[in-house]
Length: 95
Length: 377
Image (tube, rainbow over all chains, first blue to last red):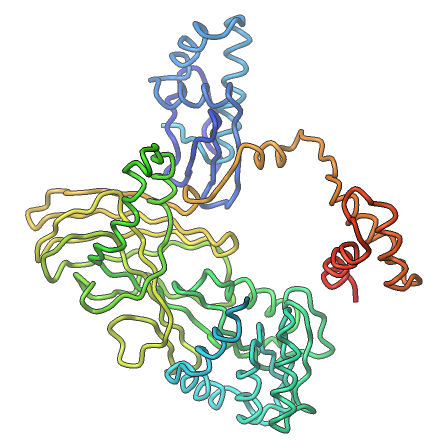
């Protein structure tokens, strides 16, 4: 099944089939169904934390905007790109 | 020092195991069959297969034990019917297809010693389409257990050691399986089959079980055991309640925090096996008789693995690997194995090329031996 596209209005949560563990500020994932490993660097890890705790992608971008010196449009593009990748890898689920 | 010989003594003195394998091979081997014994060890499966009527046995053993295996076969007058090959089954090329494939790479919980991977590969590469596999199916049993001595081991990391904080290991400890021999006295409920799988299918799978607490106690985790179907109606098991239990330990899968349970409480178990990665995840939910959820615990050996930042950096797609001095020496050995040079010449050349690693010809020879026994024929 093709997952719905990630937009600023999307609400995301970790997939039940995704295991993660933190290692020196970075996250390592194992997707149980695909048996695939995936790693996020420190910035990606921070984006993951915001995406999975905020009510929407837009809200996550709002938090990250306070932390990173980058324009809003560029940040939205980067966050949606990462979120889309994580949804395709079945690590995140669009609610 | 080696405990290998003692390990094989234990295998050969485990009567329930041997009797079950003998019965199974008598059942599935037909006169003249070609049998492959994976991970032959002392070679007992091949000997039993010959007794059952096999025309030829390929005994695969990738360690130096193969010489003993060969000698035992010869001493029993079966040297001409058993072909010994020092190779792992996943790398071997056999001159003919097998009618029967047998192994005991089962482990303590039915999957971690590799049977699924070995049989899936065998079915694809060197077994006949109608080949029989021994064991053919694996059942995974779980039971609620109280094992205070082992629970203390899991909780060990919560306290300082010599005054030092060692709690960094807690997560690894709670996400690891612990080998132990379970006794009926450890059980708070009956071992229950959570899944049954054909051994020629190494795909990941999910197993579930609903357990009932049958006597009150402290629930420390799940006790895992297996029941392997060797042939129709012929089983081996390490279940603590089996009459003919084989001499193999079980595994404790801990929960995060031990909890008191009462008769009638329910324990829901959901497990996910990834045989290819030898990974196991387990979720446990304890529900009281009145329906209240008393505890939920989620674990995975993925979180129990020792992973280092260095490993992650080294395996990142954008990293640029650079050979270490020993890596360069290994590369040299492989380059020198050109099908012309003699081993003695290679050893001397390696000692000359890598003086920073080898202070004597003997050191270089040992290194070369390690490489050539693994990568050359």
